[in-house]
Length: 329
Image (cartoon, rainbow, N blue to C red; front, top):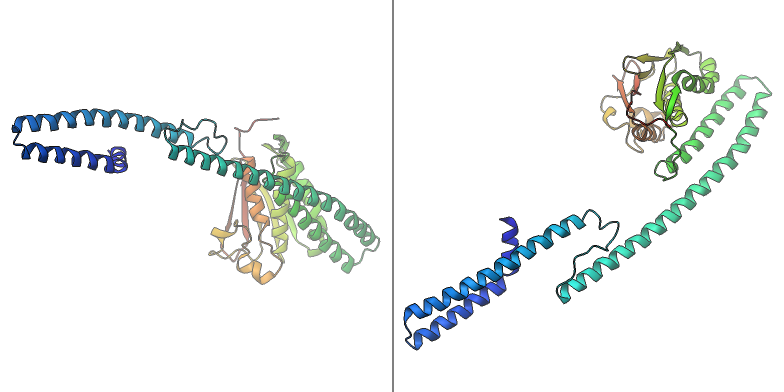
């Protein structure tokens, strides 16, 4: 009925003209005092023929409407299947649609070209910047003094931010190198722990971790990035106490710290891009990108990540790694 209403509304002028002509014929016939039956018969015959034509045109309208609705799903890809124009106005509209489509394709190509150039530039930049970082690390390792160890930590943080830049750019790239396989979860965690071992030692934080002997279906490189980000946050906001890494039922990896925690009002927004929360603003070191990247990567890998904290007794970050539907490469 709604479609019929649209059709009648679009043809209201033609229908009004038809009834106007019928009224003119009725007046003329009445002036000539023709029999009323003849007048009514002529009018009814015109109404019948007009209704048949209108019904036939309405069925054509319905078919074209359904066809255009189906085209809405592929119009972003091609304009080859647009219905044949039946009048000049429709031809003009189709020319407009094709012009807009071609302009959109040109804009998309330009955007992809610039994006590729940007990723290529930052990829080269990351590799270039890592050379002086590695050189500085070697220079600092020559002297085992507290201030030098602290400088090594800051240098490690710089390298982590450099990797975050490249990860952020590669998330939406068509060439993102996800390699899904059965990976040893312990090996991934050990790599992350070795990276942050000097910070655990210098800050005298206790690490509670026992090997799991567990394999998960994931991408080792990208999951390692997530684990490193979570451990980095735990170390950043834990001044004393411990950080524990344990495996819960259902292949849920839990990384828990005894740090300052997260305010309850900040929890719903911690995965938003650029959101730092109360503690992040107080610390002046938060970028608001780390957890955002973690959630994006987990979604791409088919994992889940969530955070629990009461704002007082530390923070627990959990990653559900049980995703059997992923294909092993």
